[in-house]
Image 1 (cartoon, rainbow over the protein chains, first blue to last red):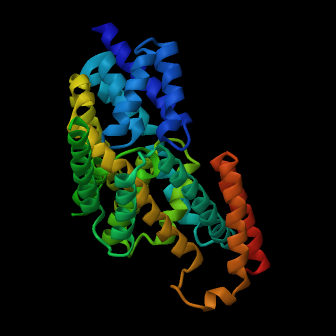
Image 2: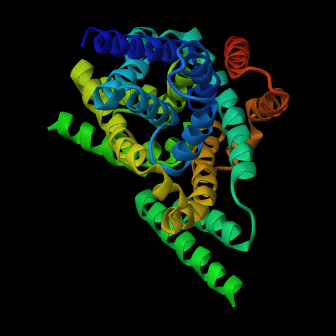
Image 3: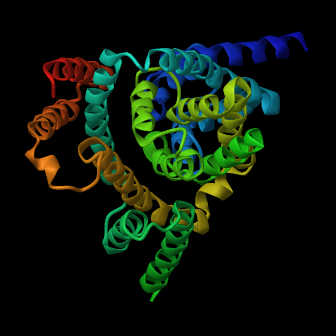
Amino acid sequence: MKERISKLWQLFATFFKIGAFTFGGGYAMIPLIQHEAVENHGWITDDDILEIIAIAESTPGPVAINAATFVGYRTCGFWGAACATFGVVLPSFVVILLISYVLRQFQNIKAVQYAFNGIRVGVLALLLKALVNMYQKSPKGWAAYVVMAGAFVLTAFLKVNVFLVIVACAVFGLITASAAERWAEK
Amino acid sequence: MIYLELFWTFLTIGAMTFGGGYAMLPLIQSEVGARWGDVISNESMINFVAVSESTPGPFAVNMATYVGAEMGGVFGSFCATLGVVLPSFIIILIVAKCYDRFRQSRVVKGCMSGLKPAVVGLIGNAILNVLMTVFFPTGLILGVFANPAFYIYVAMLAVMLVLAFRKVHPILIICLSAAIGIALGFLGF
C-alpha cells in the first residue's frame, strides 16, 4: 500500500515536471517522457514509447494527455493514469491563469499592443510551418488531396460546421480505404 | 449556465481533435468565435496562441484554461480544462486495455486515412482566418494596399517564415516579432 502511494506520487511529480518544462506541447513532450519514464524510472520500454505515439495519433485529444494517461495506466492502473494526467495539466493551468490575469492588466498599454501587432505576424509564420509539417505527415494520393481541398473549401468558403466536416472526412476515409482494399483483393 | 457551456464546448473539442498541437486550433476558433466572439476577439485569440507557444504545457490545455478564465474566472477555466482533458483520458483507458485489437482495426485505420488530410485542410482554414485578421482587419478593401504598413508587415512575415523553416526556436520568433512590432508601432506604422 505504502509502495503504491509512493509510486502514484512519483507519477504525479514526474509528469508535473514534464508539463512544466515542455514548450509547445504535443510531440515536443515525447523525448522528455522517454527520458523520465523509460530511462529514469523504467516504468515503460522504448517500444511502449512508439506505441504511445501510434495511439496518440489515432485517438482524439492532446498528445500530452494521451501519453500521460497511457504511462500512468501501464504503471499503476486507473489511479496512476489520474495522477499522471493531473500532474501534466497542473503547471500550464496555473501559469495560464496567472498570465491571463496579468494580460488583462497590461492590455491597454501602447507598447503591449504594438508588441502583439508584431507577434500576430510571427504566429502566422509558425502556423504556416505547422501546416507544412502536417502536410508531410499526412497520407498522399488522390483521396487524401480530395479530403484536404474539401475540408478547406467547406469550412473556409461554405462555412460548414467544423465538427460535421471532421465526421464526414472520417467516413470518407473509411469508405475509400475499404474500397481500395476490395480493389486490391480482386 | 456558463460553466456547463464551457465544460461541454471543450469536451466536444477534446473529443473531436485528432493529432496534437495546432490540430485543435480550427475547432477552438470556430466554437469560441460562434459562442463568445463578442468577448474574445479574433485578435486576442491569436495573441493567445503566441502566449500558449511561449508557456509550458500542451496547447489544448493552455487554450482551454485561457478561454475558461476569460469567460468564467478560475472555476470557468477549471471546467474548460476538465472538459478538454476528459475525452482523451477515458479513451486511452479503454484503448490501453485492448491495444492490439485497436491498432489492427480496419475501421480505425480507415477513419484515420480521412482524418489526417482533413486536419491539413482545417488548419488551412484557420490560417486563412489569422491571415485576414492580421492583414485585412477592416475587411477586403483596396485601401489596405495603399498603406505602406501593409508591405512592411508582409516583408516581416517573409523574414519570420524563413526563420521558422530554418528551425529557429518558436519562442525566439515570437520575441523577435514582438520587438519589431514595438519598433514599428512607435515609428508610426
